[in-house]
Image (cartoon, rainbow, N blue to C red; front, side, top):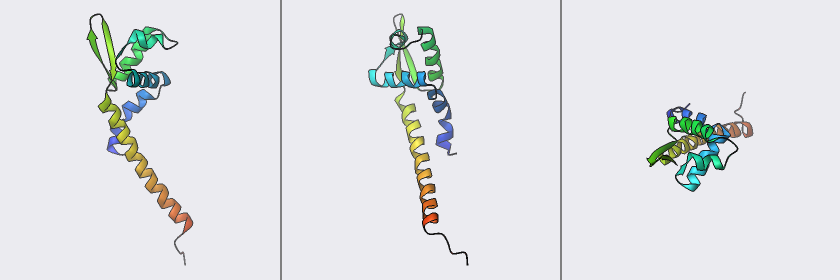
Amino acid sequence: MTTALAESAPLFAALGDPMRLGIVLTLGEGGPLTSARLAAERPVTRQAVEKHLAILADAGLVRSERRGRERWWSVEAQAVGSAGSALQQASRRWDAALERLRAHVEDPPDRT
């Protein structure tokens, strides 16, 4: 496993849950939102959303800012970008490996 991909493992683990992935996508599209607003769009309680946000924050995918009595959550673009770069790197490695396999299958080396 490449270093970049290994370092991104906690990000991918956090995004492996459909609810957390949905929260990140919502924050990415809608800008900073409160946990109450995020919960209003989902079939779970605000407390459940806050637990998901804590996991995402621990993975470095989101951050919060206190404004008055509320916490406003937003996506950490750098972390998402790093994960995307790691996936692109892994994709290039797999593409190269598959190309070598294709070449081997289509034109096997002589075994005489």
